[in-house]
Image (tube, rainbow, N blue to C red; front, side):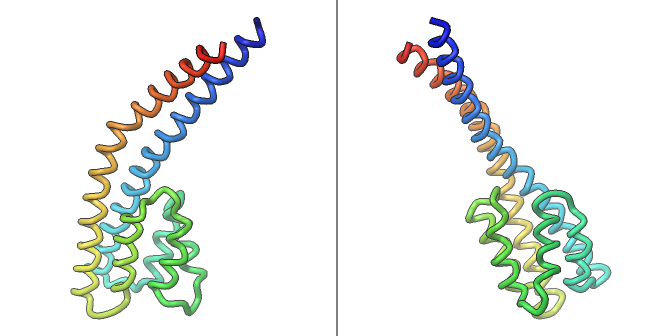
Length: 165
């Protein structure tokens, strides 16, 4: 009997942890998009007001904590590689972003360092609008689904434990 109880508790705990892990993915995506939103706002200001070159912006943003800082740190190590190619290669390491989020940022990378300042600012503003929209959607999804994942996983664990005991 004690083995059955321990087994049932292990099933409930593992299912519940799975739900918490799924909900943490949603929350981390929101956090990463918030950081990208701040970075794009700062990038727009740096280009608009002080006309900061890309390499110097990469150095500034490499000081960010987490994945975004690591992303810009790895861009600094790319050497002579083009902007789009280096962003595309390093974007694969941004595991919390969806494909649409990465596509928005890669479209920005196509225009960075090319053309005049006005065009670059428009590209950044366009990317900022896309990231802001994605952030709004991610917050809605996170608020709606995170609690659901945690609840359903707990009750699924209880159901499986009851069926097996």
